[in-house]
Amino acid sequence: MNSAILLSIVLIYFAVLLGIAYYTSRNSDNDSFFIGNRSSKWWLVAFGMIGTSLSGMTFISVPGTVGKAGFGYFQVVIGYWLGYFAVAYILLPVYYRMNLTSIYTYLERRLGMNAYKTGSLFFILSRTLGATLRLYLVIKVLELFVLKQLGISFEVTSIIILGLILLYTYKGGVKTIVWTDTLQTTFMLLALVICVGWIMHSLHLSPAGTWQAMSEKGYTKMLTLDLNSPGFFLKQILGGAFITIAMTGLDQEMMQKNISVSNLKDSQKNMVVFCFVLLLANFIFLLLGGLLYLYADANGIATVGDDLFPTIAINSGLPFFITICFMVGLISAVFPSADGALTALTSSFCIDILGIKRNPNLTEAQQRTTRLIVHNSFAIVFLGCIFFFREIDNGSLIDILLKMAGFTYGPLLGLFAFGILTKKQIPPQLPIWLCLLSLAATFGLDLVNNCSWYITKMNIGADMAASLTSLSESVFHGYKIGVELLIINAVFTFFLLLLFAQKRTTAQYERTTE
Image (cartoon, rainbow, N blue to C red; front, side):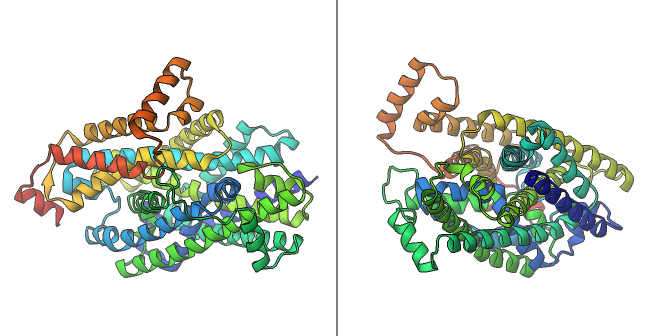
């Protein structure tokens, strides 16, 4: 009975989203879809971006990390916070000065068409993998704890959810998403606060008592001082800062919303307000994680990791309204990242790869037809990626997410850093090959350094595994690469570009400053 009620709540939630989509997409055109006609309110964008940044991964995985790493993840969050200032005061002025619809147009004007296409392709790869990994996690929870009891399979669930996301994004695009993200962020944060409050009440803990109880269990430990550890605090903070610069400032999905604000000052205001709220929200998620582990200890629940929150919320005898709050919070956490990604990928592919804005022969109707075909195609790609992640799931997906970001956003960061920090040019056909070379070198380095991780994930023979382990110890002497993998990849890209750089001509300089 409860499963049927929960499913009904999910469907009602979607009905609300469809109503918002219908209302906001009236009289929409292609500019509404791509940049919201540059009329979005900064405070709406700031609030809605919280949901996009946190996602279902934060809602499920971050609380689950507390049992093993305490509040260690907050080191990365501090880095995120610093990175948002770099985005606001270095990258946003560039985008507004050049009046960009796609931020990768900067690479075209600065480094040429090959760099432009390269940046777009790496974004498409990065956002596709990241968004589908987050979406997979929520579909997995829905299937395990709700839909399996109703006889609805994982595959059917995935198809239905993607179909519903298509329904409310296909026409309005950014213009719709700015409003749906605001609604979803509200529900997600309300669910978070209610769950924290109820568990504290059920354990008879005050705020001070909660902190003391978590400290006694070691859950509040934040700083890691071991230089060789992947969690060393300087690695985490620097890695977090550059992850933000790459995954927000160089990400078309996130910047698409920011540049939909009418002017630079308001867009910067949006970014600064957003980063402070995000700092607080992540802290509360970690606080929730500590409370969940305290509750599990008190009630003999052995579940850990990604399954902890849904197990307690749905299967541990908590009041049903807490289960409802969890479910609403969960779907509110996933859809801002999934719908925004689908819209941004459609925009990037249409504008950057197909060049529909550059073709004067395409009518508005033809552009719309192309956009819808691309939009539906990406939904199919999403489906394939979701099925792939089901095969490699190891129970803690946030580690996989950060590792993928290191591989796929590193070349983007290197390209933009080269364009902004130097005055040199690259031979026209080289950027894609240099970025791929950097990606291969970074993968090889990480394969040796974190060989134990790859040995458990890949079908590596015993002899090969022994050789990798021996090589790792002799080269790195116990040092483990963590979130700084993205920085390493970006540095490789930057110096490869610098190695083949040429002096910029006057014509190239004028094109960049137009």
